[in-house]
Length: 108
Length: 121
Image (cartoon, rainbow over all chains, first blue to last red; front, side, top):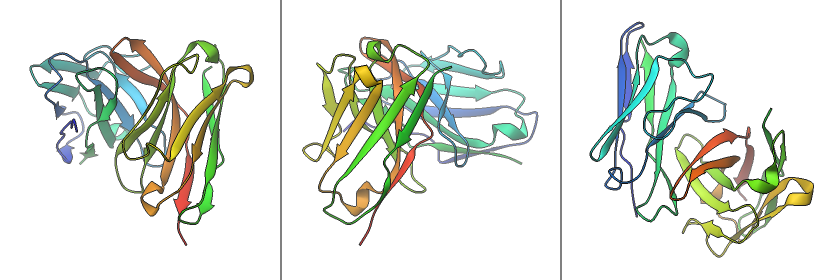
């Protein structure tokens, strides 16, 4: 089955930049999407179509794509950004949803 | 405002059944595809099932195929998940989520708060 691989954890000091990668073989032909999930809450979409930001999401959240990897970048990290982040894409047929393994961002 | 509210979760014995519901409001429910996604305690997100706007296209994850049935009632703005032959590994918070995007590139722009299903004897 198709898998998306993320680092388990990323630690960053306030004001610094956090980068979270997501790797998958179909990413060159499928968009990547990113969700933020805080404890006890539902996921929230923060990036769609690799690099687009939904309304209401702060500008410090950005996304990029290169080959088999998509990256979520949080610039000027704030304490409120501490959360789990999941990438999502589709398999090569575009039929099934696949979520990444998840990355816990800790703000030191 | 888009709202999705799940209900129907609870404690059920292995082999039992449960029916989850998701009430939608704030958007034209009948024109959107919708998903069920689950999250086991302390684990990541797992896609469960999808249904398109007129129920013509339905998909399941291999882990639930043959045991779970997704359905919708557009007149009632509601999504359902009938879960049979439940196993301990089905224990999770179940979220309904609205699907947006274009063919082959779909994503989930609004999620409910989830309902907890616990399968235990």
